[in-house]
Amino acid sequence: MLKALIFDIDGTVAETEMLHLRAFNLAFEFLNLGFVWSKAEYKMLLDVCGGKERIAHYFAMNNLEFRNEEILIAKIHAAKTKFYADLMCRGEMEFRPQIKALMLEAKSKNIKIAIATTTSAANLDALFAPIFTNDWRKMFASICDGDKIKEKKPNPKVYSQCLAELGLNPNQVLAFEDSQNGLCAANRAGIKTVITHNRFTFDQNFTDAIVCGGDLGDCAAQFSNGRTRIFNLAICNELLSAKELGKCHLQTA
Ligand code: XBP
Ligand code: MG
Image (cartoon, rainbow, N blue to C red):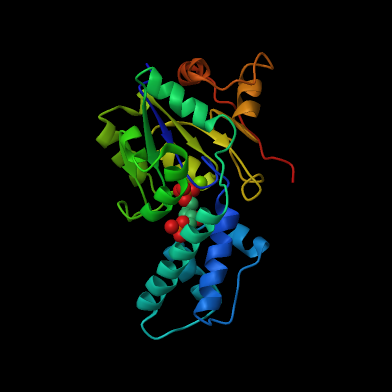
């Protein structure tokens, strides 16, 4: 019986990764580091979850060595997070299709909603406050973010911590993700996962998702054999009790 929906954030609730990329590059320029990341490079770097971990991975991959590297990475990431918040304030970052309606429907029918993300806590305020007011945190029964949980996806810790805080078993919840790392993390925690891929993750392997598509409408249409494009709690209940996985195959590039 469905008791909760657990949402990943970046790429799932909203298409935020292009803004993250801009914020990273503003931080690199601000600190005169002599490099920026291209979209193609960032698509590869997204295989590493967590902004600080991603920067450290880039340094290692490019044999860049700095004295007190950990302090420098923390400084870069603090600047990036500030630039990200500034960018979010300036633009209208919308939720992906049907996400807000599904969250509100769940709340209205006493189905808990929760967050399991590797992004920093500050990024959540920047995204949710303009849409659900400054009290947005009260809507969520559990919020597990990259500051709270140090082990990043595909480690399942963020999802197992979320389940513990919800007091639920994996078979009582559905997860929503956009990436292979996120799918792996949720599946390792025993949770059936809906995938809505995007420009950075469209060609990843989502075979183990219960359903996958370009957005929730695609997922509803695929799962219902075209019966509906409305992704609501009725679909969530059907997905949770579905035996067969959606057998999502590699998306053609
Ligand atoms: C995506 C991530 C994050 C963001 C950048 O998180 O891996 O690292 O790319 O945010 P999600 P930070 O699990 O929501 O898809 O720089 O704050 O890490
Ligand atoms: Mg994501």
